[in-house]
Image (cartoon, rainbow, N blue to C red; front, side, top):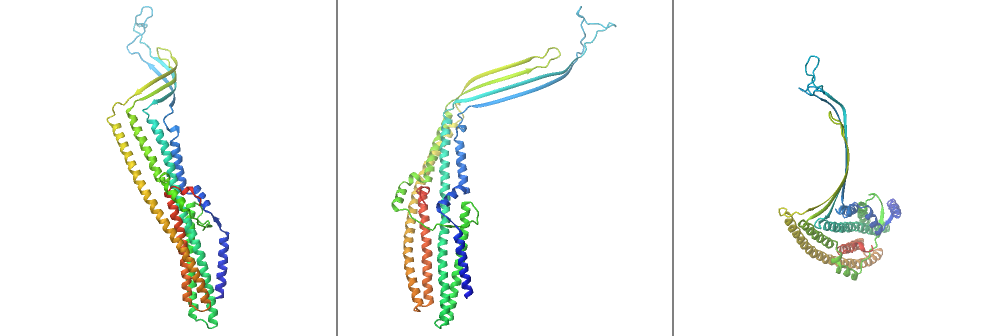
Length: 462
């Protein structure tokens, strides 16, 4: 038994030393690491970067299109020209020339060897749309609104990630406090074994009392091991959110403060202008409104300018009858065009009607989301108030059970109550403290959910 006590003391000392070596991960540090490392947050930021590129003037169709082209060709000919049925002419008489036998002399074949020709050209063409029915103007404004929408979507992702972060962070805090309580319970149970052994030696207790104390120590040790397992699992869960080594060890801040009720009421009143879901519906409404205007641009004409500047060089090959000709040409061209789609089969009319219906649907969706957000806020407020009340009751319950335990401890040491009654007081205190820890962090998480609905989650000090 003494060996077991010595081993337990050494175990507790080693465990305390390990805890002392752990670094404290504050709430602010956890937020900073999450915003820097979390995969979901990184992807949300990348989506914002894409939307930022899309709203750039380079994607607005306001700039002209300039195209350059160039080419070169090389041709070599080796040709033979035959003249069947043709005879040489006598230059003096103009008649067929005759050979010594009086026969007409056939016209000889003509040869053209290594006749080379080169052609070179280069052209720059520019096109610019002066007016397109205001389609690109409204499309450009639409892209800006989509960028703002992507920022709100990233904010929503960050809010959800922060809420996920603190659900795990506070779970670690709860288990840490539970572990401390269980360690104290185990320490009391171990001392009880010693007392029961001393009492047994003096004939003041029975062997059954010692066995009961040993059973309680075993149960308390198992509860502590289970809590340590849950704590280590929760730490790994938080490391996943933080995107760092799963075996990184740390402690968390168990201090919890609640926002004054007056501030919460102010946040709730301003929820309609800060809630991220409602803000997204506003942006979608603007985007749908621009869709209508973009489609209406199909009713108007398009006016465009175009210009070109080119150079052509041709080195012609000689033929059998003509010498080669070289041509060097520079060309400048400027033009304008007007295109008006007077009737496109009704496609523009259909697109405008559909865009108006989509806008109407977005208005209905906004009303639905507003109703749901108000409901969620009222529910979240009621849940938070209820959990805060439970926490206050549990605090009072801990104080009552602590007082009862201290009195029971005194009575047990005086031999006025049994070990079973003392154990019951100990269990009651344990349950009261663990229930208080659960109520505290449940209330804090309910507060964070309420803050998210009011759009203030990222504006408070943790």
